[in-house]
Image (cartoon, rainbow, N blue to C red):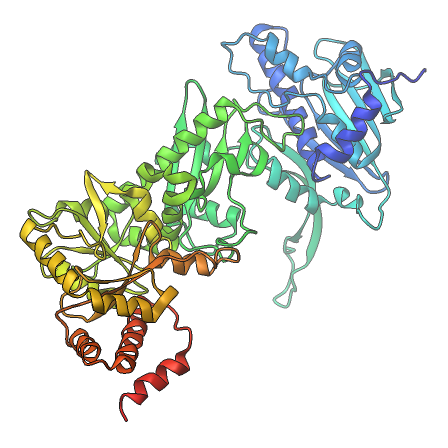
Length: 634
């Protein structure tokens, strides 16, 4: 029996496949089970068109048989089997897939769902085995055949004996090394774990003999002092669930089942905050079962956190975290997507970027938003709990990609305001705007309490206008990205034109500024490069001083960039604003008019540091400022 050589430079291809294509060796079991499932599907399809095929309904199965003594693991099926020619064609050439050829040849109107689209999955067996034997008999053929190989050096095909139609793939496992334990694949517990992980939803039963401990029956003549006895019993069991939860109609599944599924699969001790089911048939067919966690994962805002949905193709786990199915703004969502329409690459571990994938991702994005909006409208308390956990992520989503997702996320945002303790949406703000209110007003601060006491707020609040309180670092970037809501511009209360002025008011302001020029020039001269400019304020009502900024960068943005490793040099153009109607301004002017420049300089320093404190900006020399204030008391 002469050994035959693999075709298509298979030695090199097999080496690449074993060492590079698959990330984890354990994946071999998923591939072999998927091939066995395909073989059963092919036989079922053939039975539809060939009356001579006697399909044993209810008896079709995949069987796992570990043998520690022989150091073999056998994956068996009672599917369609292969002829000698098919063995040669399918296993003699790496990357030649019988499943793919069958799918191409079958009637497109038939709903046969074949997983193996490339012919390398079988060869993953060589990652764990030093010899692989395939014993197979084709449906309708009297003869069986044995294919055997020890790797890239070639294979043999010879006649064999198999009583029934189907295929056995027999793996003689490699010896254990310090780096890898191959004996684990002979342990029934480990095999059950791998089936649960990768092949739990294969639609055919996966059977294996499992040893269990159970109590012996109590003898009829046993007395009152009888002690229960236990025995080990080996019996064949189905070790996969077969029907995925997401394939069942939502009306047939209790919420408790969804909760238990989520907690078991994604290792969360809490039930999900929201459960989302969706499906589509047409251009792309898929089903999805998604969950919104009730709390922020401990590593959510770290580099180690990986977003993504579990990706299944016809019940087989293809990727544990497919990041391309979720936008970053919804990276907190967990769940599964199952579709027969994915275009897979040869490893089944990575997806090619396909139109189908993009269509599914777009559909999921829209569905997630709609479900969150529904939660916002129907259960405000529950939505606010979600907002506490993931509201910050939605804000980041508005800012990312130059505001590409702002239309998607705008209606989901919540803010504190100057009217009431409850969070409101931007849409709700617009609906209750005062008559004649020109803008949507906002102010930035470190807390709601601090925002309410800022001097810039006073003149806007006195008009009866509601003010959004921005208390997170990202908020300033959010309002800049949004720019406007329903045609109304977002405007900082610190903008000089936050309230429209009449021509008379503008003329009076200009006259006052001209008179104050000597004072303002002295302030700028005293502070030098610490400020960009000094001016009389149009935004203060009773407070004497505040700090604002000219240009696109606000003070809040400066604070944000100062915390970044490479952003500390970015500074806003600080403007010291003085209230000409306040007593401190009058004291400063009087000192300057009297020629006491030393006292006037101290007043300027005090006003400057007060403005820094109000803005939440750091003081360069707290000790010097303390001495300055205490000196005025002497």
